[in-house]
Length: 96
Image (tube, rainbow, N blue to C red; front, side, top):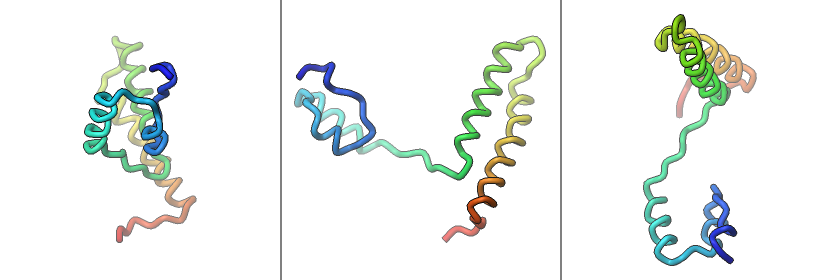
């Protein structure tokens, strides 16, 4: 199989079974030592959606939208969604 058969995957076991050239495989395995996942919080999907919304509003309304103000406006929605999800899932704020 050629390079077309190597589909990007987040599954490490699938990655190990792909037909990589040795040099590429070793470089990729070495780089995986430095990979860190982004911690997820309930409702966190809403965070990036609103960051993008603020960005696009500033880009498309350059005469009226200010970056800082747009982000501050969106933070209200993000915090409300995370609070709602924490209540829905009955999570408290205590870390163990």
